[in-house]
Image 1 (tube, rainbow, N blue to C red):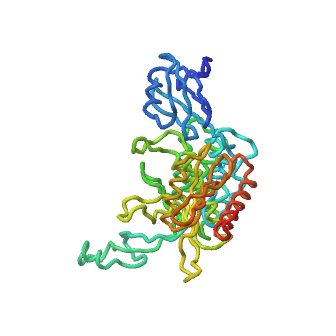
Image 2 (tube, rainbow, N blue to C red):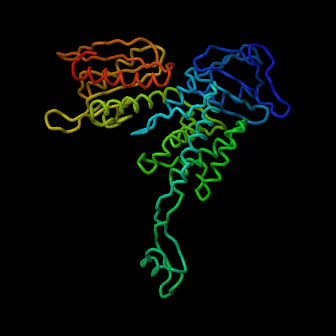
Image 3 (spheres, rainbow, N blue to C red):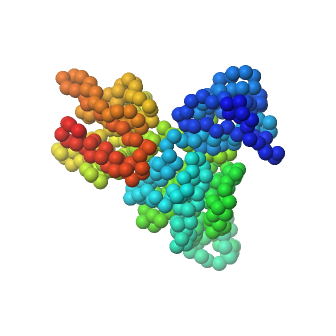
Length: 418
């Protein structure tokens, strides 16, 4: 319960329903000791301070979404609403690599403050459109034992396993099958969302239809990693649904003290999402403007000569060298999902620029004011630019802001001024 008021419950579910806002202040809730213990066991989600034995002040940390924690008397249904409007949030997570562009149809016209219902509807709608012209098939090399020849006989296996016996035959053939990574990813996300308590009837029915259409596709084993896929012309119609499916599966667990904790629901870490979006969106905008190759989360550089301390910029963009045409690092960018700049950000970017041999670096914040810091290095100066990308702006405006940011970065690189 919030602010001393009685919390709504029903006769069948005794879970404490706690609703917090990302970046919001402290709110007071009445909790049973077992529910306090549940939240304490998942201290990566909320900050907690006691007022009395039964009243606790809670504040959300850096994740958003909805998750059901604990069992029995300790069950807690925790919802953390994002401060970014959900349609903008889905714009971030739907920004697929390469040529895939955000599709506004992913977001329903009905505005929803919660991430999980909006994501379930968006995924169900995107998956239905992906399968509109049929389930994607591909050829897969299959090893089998058959009474007749299909494909090629594996002579070595035949002689080793059945010397002198004509049948059955050890064969290998190309099977045209729907059991491919793209379909396994869609099915895993659909099954994951169907397990979420309280899912609305419309997306639930759509997800059930999707599961039925993917008959013959293998289920992911418990704890298995999501299948890897690469955008191409063959799976282009699947791309939006696959990006959302990856989000669903990533959000079904989070790290706690180095352990991977499975959750009944979905959580998204906002700073990770912001970093991934900026790296992918700005990298693609730079490629379209200046050419070259973007490398998001580039891990090819080390701070020390021994290679023990890896540098972790969110984006390094490579451009042809004027001397020999070889692609070399030309831009370094780091995203910061913070309310205000910090001195450590400048130290970090200075290290990136010195190690990569660049005269300027770019820090991108989700709020605040743009600016420039000049750092004396040897006989010259590094220019560290501070940019701001306002996530509260409409998604079409946000896309234009990314293009403007790429232009500013390119101008700073070529002319030294923005």
